[in-house]
Image 1: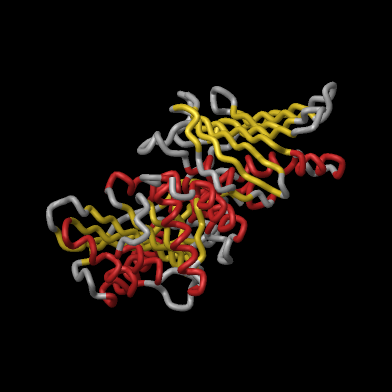
Image 2: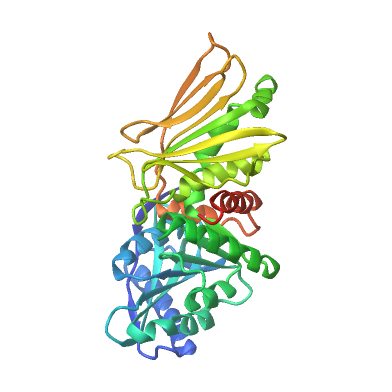
Length: 392
């Protein structure tokens, strides 16, 4: 059975903004109308109003809503949910909350009548001083006894009152560190938030961390063979190249911080008393240590016009032995491929090329909706990154 990408997405205005019963009545009417239209079109398929989770989405600009609607359309067939989309235009003229209901229904391309699985959406838009009231309007609309996710699609302000109120209502908070305004400051704030929330069972996901999955898998894959693992204890130099961060080019981009934090946390490297050293305008260096062995980590900005700002371009690990083993993952100049190269002895060189899959927001978010437990590896990588940047 095939599913098309076409979806039904018709918005209906809810006149009584803060009346939960009005919203529920409008949603029930929406489903009744949808089913009636299906019968009028001689469509024997039935719509199933199924919800397996609540998904709260917070955006700070209306121009982000198209991306959010595309993401919801993509995940609706695999994660039927009640989506509460909040748009907070704090800089706009004061305007009280407006509310709309709509549905996403995947059409089945099959001759046999099929049931269609749909998810429902409640959109809330507020401007000016009314933006802070969005959590009060959204949280009562959550379906009880279902896991609740918050996707914060905005620059991270972990002490923001709206963020705090929404995150306390969620079982899992999904962020995107690519949207960090000041990476060093925001990594500190993220670490503090995770440490505070750990006792309250709030877990954190990061779409930018998910984008590093292929990098981490390829780097770990160099050492799958038992004879290669000994090289892990001989690494003494790491080179990380990345495209500069958009809003803070003078700071290390989040992806570079996280990949170094991941290496350090997995391999037991600890920051020494020396903090980040600025080699020149494009390069920073930090020294890590394990059992008396010093590991020099250089993080370097590079120009890659074909790549998005803040993305990794190269990770290279080198050993201190006479053979000079090295292991490298490199993104091609056009951004289309990841290339790996490993040299363990002078005459041995292994190369592979993989096509990069630039996953959509819907694909990344959909994968995070399948996880409810804490991602301890991510949390430890963030903690190690915090130790590395220190007070810089």
